[in-house]
Length: 127
Image 1 (tube, rainbow, N blue to C red):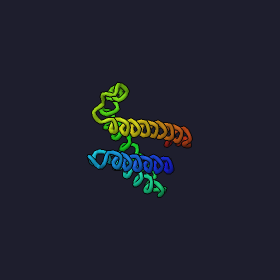
Image 2: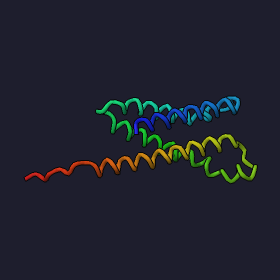
Image 3: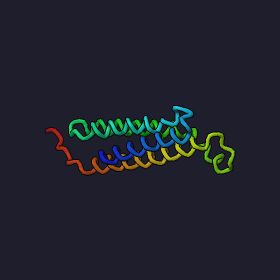
Image 4: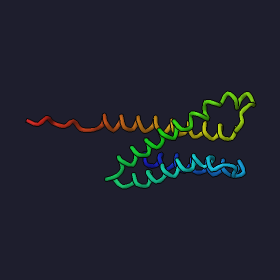
């Protein structure tokens, strides 16, 4: 999960910077994916330490959940993008990319937690 966290973070940073440049730096909101990506990158770096791994990945997943939920407003406008009536098509595209990446990351995280839980040795009850 550490490498995946760092990879998703890096992709989001690049996506945010490209969106900002492509929209002629019209709005700082184009950098939102980059901000989410920076938080994931930081969590990924912290997760390299075994003592902080679980907490850092949990924090990264919480950020991913908030980012996915926050992008839903623009993703819901995807129909307008296909109709050609979208006011800000770049925002819809970038939000959709961010949403798909973060949902994929969340699914991978949940599956990882389930696998880790199943692989834990059973503790013996106290006598």
